[in-house]
Length: 247
Image 1 (cartoon, rainbow, N blue to C red):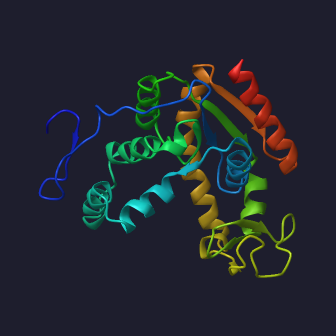
Image 2 (cartoon, helix red, strand yellow):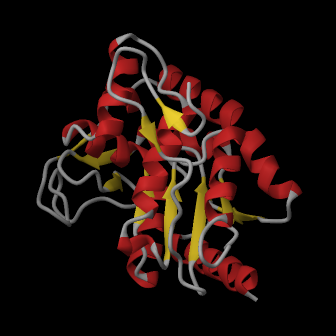
């Protein structure tokens, strides 16, 4: 393979991506949010997006977009998925890089679900180092006990249309079964009904994510936030962490 190219053998043509750079403002802030399912990470990402005016970049959304619009990266990812193989980190990294090159990311982004491993974290470092302002990411871990996560997930409800998250006890929609944001159907996902399945998902998350959290902790870039506080207090703590990092 030619250095700096992605290829899938007889699949889509090779894509040159490593020499591309992104443009960033001097005040740009790239926030990496860590937190297991049920930690409130998605809620906090939306709050940051609304207040800071920077987009939420979630890898799940990136994959859905690239697959749906059949971009070169989407075709490349699909070629692996069709063979039952994991999509390589290089493809995921290229999708994130492509997203960062869009104008709305020049002042920063809230990263949700990326980086997922050390290879991706190092790729993010390289990408930001090559940017105009050579910024460093702000990593925040929303920490919640496994028992609390289990309680939250079994009571979680999700909008089928916009994916907004609710809880039957702590944060129910104003009208039962109807999303406050888009009026879509609010339902319980099948994988939130099975406690054993939830336990397995959490175990996989911690096994995969702890090394990445430690990667940022060792570099002095990580702040832990108590995710068992109110949504408002968690958000305040995240804001404080961002301000400290900017000083």
